Length: 394
Image (cartoon, rainbow, N blue to C red; front, side):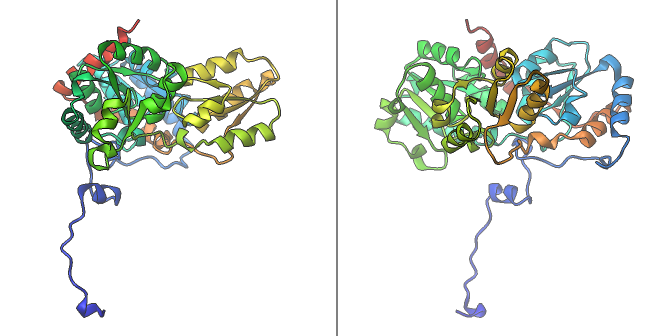
């Protein structure tokens, strides 16, 4: 067929396609929007001094939070470090701070805005610092899923449990439908609570944390779990499968923890005799089953703190943290290696770099509020309800 004979197809690209091609933007999504302003050059030798000066000028008006996965160049300016929920609570405990600069990703800054007072302003140094896992469950997809559960006649039996690593919209959905939020530390307690409220759980958005908690920690079988795929009609499941399931897992995952494989575990055991394998519960089920220790980021840190000198560890979590821990415990004779041979940072977390932090701090010091993360009142109310249910867990 010649060019002249080629039919002209009237095909319009979808909003998602345009977004992925960089030709569109969705401010309610964590795929990223443009960051305004002129950033300092990364090669500027005065960046550290500029950050210190701006932070000193702001004084108690600013409180800088640094997630464990942040770069060392950023973490040095954090007033506190921790996982996402710990940092959000730390922010709420500092009501005198007018500005909360969250060096993390979008959903974390949203959680901080939900938990802090209306007078406090949460700033994310780069608005494109998102979370691929949180992006895997949109409000529209989850609403459609609930319709599927309703049509299957099981919605009244289902209690949603959403991982902290989710958008404010998903947290609000969870609160509105009688569910709770969980972290990787209290997922088992959250599920126990949920099964006291209903017969089934819709677990969002990380399938691996949901599966690992249900099977490894609570004694369910893999057959008790089904995987809801939002990109397939009815989630790719029959009404019978939904009626038989105890755990309805959302098809989402962490792009970093999902990279670790059973082969990674087997390989490191061969390379490092006597090694202890310690992984995050966001890893695949077969990786968790083959590991020696499994736990949250805080658990990983505490386990290494308590480890004897001379012990060997392979860690399955984000590389910035693993490298920082390896340097920290090297003087104690603890050998710490990354579980996989392939280097893998969290690419979106790494968007928060020193130039973005300097730009945000200097802007605030000059009286210009930038990159504010603000959750609307209705979403905040229902999301806070879900978070409060988590805080009330025994």
